[in-house]
Length: 284
Image 1 (cartoon, rainbow, N blue to C red):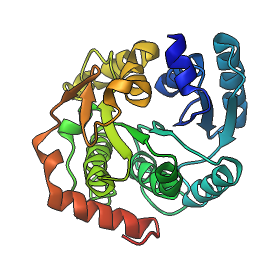
Image 2: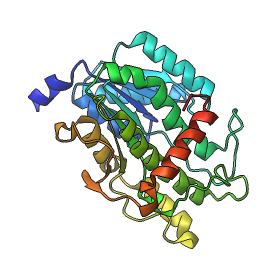
Image 3: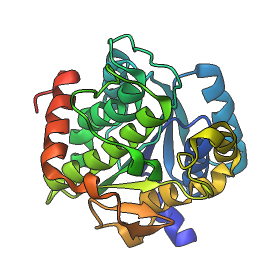
């Protein structure tokens, strides 16, 4: 283990949604491996509490908290600027922050919030930090998705639930978008020394979308499962030497798995990319 530690010290790991759940467990595990971990949180008080807890449990002082509201493109841009002004490298970006929203809500940018945070949040932050990741290569991007993606669909006529919105459906759609974004980005990153992979968090014993009538019960089960177990694949993709050169794959339980049939549609992935670039004011 000590050899692994020395290997990671000095490397910078950025984890979004790091103040609770899987994100917090991911930050803790990386901190225990001696990495420099930047925890991103929307809420200062909750972020500070998590930071202190992880410092105590890991004995690692090379941890910092940065604030960002990923539902706001302005906040995301300010955060990226601040990060680049204060860090000369980024070895691993873990896009983990996500929401499940029962009611259709709009962000400050006027975009449906599930889509804005879960998909555009990954898309925009990754783009803003890509130059730094390339300069720090070999480096990695890890996108937390979900097996719920199998129930998702990328419908350009209803991309933001304008016509019809359901919380479960919107969540599933956003997780499919995470995977398609991963595959498309992987194609574009070939040869750069930057890899990108996505995953279904472990330890989610029940599929939360299989029985909608029992939906609430399933959600409760889902959220009370051990985050530490749930974080194992994120940690593996962020830190294991085994996957150093793996690019553009979907992982379940630390192994490459097949995602849904529709997730491999390159044409839809490219169109989603272009629409996302437009909605975030980036040149495709």
